[in-house]
Image 1 (cartoon, one colour):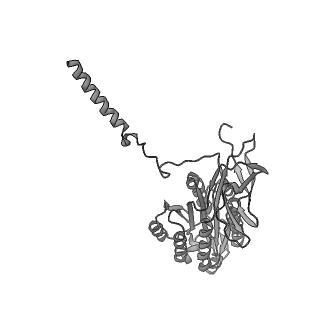
Image 2 (cartoon, rainbow, N blue to C red):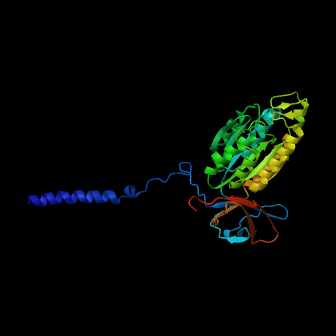
Length: 335
């Protein structure tokens, strides 16, 4: 009888344990970390942002993965990744706040805030301001009030570390964010104080990034030549702090911004006044809402690190396709 009582108690404990293990709460898996908790980067996958327009420049929505065809160096590739145009994206907004923009800071801030307000609620923005230093004004967020407050706190300073700003955003921020992304760069394009990043290096790095770059060159030349000499520029001799004639510096700046946009599949713009700047920001916001993204796994070939040409076709007549034309291939470690 005693043995039976012990057995009964053991049986009851076992039943209770089994019930606990079988309960929905016990079977529930631990919560998956969010995208903000864990950054997933697949260095093998090459993603290609694409805009598909009709002959009048209107975006063509509703295309499917099966309608896209991608070629690398003329060879068809299997599309392993597809994002429709309605997916959210992350934008890095880079604002030149050097002394050359001090005359228009309030208007620049107004236009930048208007740009963030035209994005969708789920789109995220990181704000970076640069003079001689590069400052992360706001980390990635979709909080419009926080973005507005951050942009309003910006103050102008001396020098222009444009190349350093591009390097920081590409190498330290956007390359760790997955999904659709873009850079919107507002500057006069004249670098005067970058120490480690260079013209050539940043162009190469930007070509490796799977993000569009939209450049907006703002006209500060007339302000600089009409003002008294200021830090970074010699107004009397029209020379930069690096000893380069101002006119030459601006020609070089335009070429640099055009190449940044071209190599990434984005577009260059020029704004010679605040009204045009606002319109340009609005146009870029619209384009960012209207882009597809496809991805493929390139086939490594011995000793073939370097630039590869890509071409995209769509099963749709009478369309204009805007995308990048090349990318830099790097073989994964061990291959």
